[in-house]
Length: 114
Image (cartoon, rainbow, N blue to C red):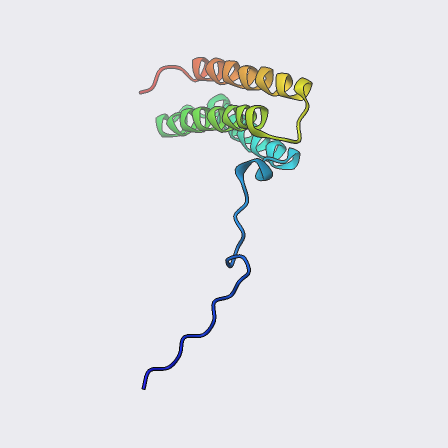
């Protein structure tokens, strides 16, 4: 004989889904910007103190990825976060532009790829 099926659990699934806006807190935006700045800083140190082509290519990679991560995090926070005010959104857009400008300046400092 077949066993009867147990009743279904009426509550939510194992993990309730969080919308992306709830994950864009000020602390997370600060962490993403800090990660981007850290990558840019390491790229600048490598570029200033190393003449090795492999190290310079690593510095270029860190500069590009750090600038993109920081700017994308700032733009995502400015456009999607429910917790930021209008003035903070303007500041995040300006910060994203400054990060991209600094990234371009650092790439010029590092020279053309070899």
